[in-house]
Length: 331
Image 1 (cartoon, rainbow, N blue to C red):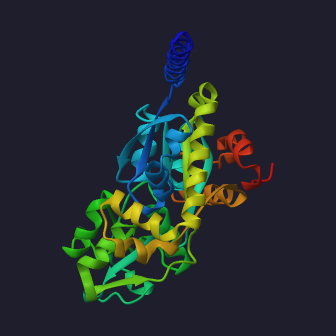
Image 2: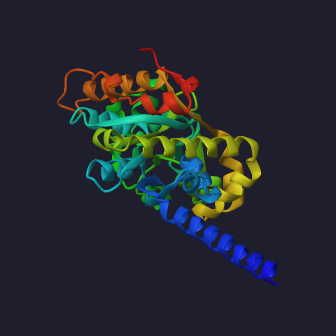
């Protein structure tokens, strides 16, 4: 009887101690709060996958995602203190590099030669790039759309003065083309797909895959990364894990992104192979930023006269810790 009582007491003590340890462990788990500004597009697929698979939580991050219609809007919000990290293409980075030096790119996480498209209406007599002369083209000022059009015109030997540009917010461009407010638009996915759907047989996508390779990049203010290097490292590890998941689970990744963006699975499946999901910091990114900066200077889109040193806008330390083999920048 006494032995039995001792066993019961021992079990109670062991259970009580175990619960105490678990309770203490739970209290010690503190998640780092961080806010991400993300464009609601396929470019940000790795973020949606990481969110769905719980990779941010696994890294100890309490992530809040703030959605934007463009990378430009996301980036501007970060510059104004609205979010900690933003997703953005090179053009907004380039324009802001003439004004300030307090932000950095800490990784590229996707690239594409097909994301941005020139879409026209056949019923206004546009069947090729040459037919754009004298036409009205809808763009998004200060974004990849604006630079892409400039590069597209040069590639097709068309003077900037030969076309008229009108600026819209991204989501307005498909209907602007459908309603005849413009004769063509330059826009990224999924807005491009929406425009093609609206026009049906009256739409034409002018080939442009050789014009520009778009990258989507992760940005942070220098002060934030200086004060929170571990948060940036955890964030990048989660996104890198998501890119690996995408490579090994194509169909499941497509479903995750389709549901997250509230798009038909068919749209995602059709566009998916246009994107290459991987973590990197390549020399080509610096070349792109320099090319865009020269374009802005030559076209009087900035008062600056010299191209910035874009190495000053690259934060390498985090990627060196997470995935050093992904760095291709010459230093």
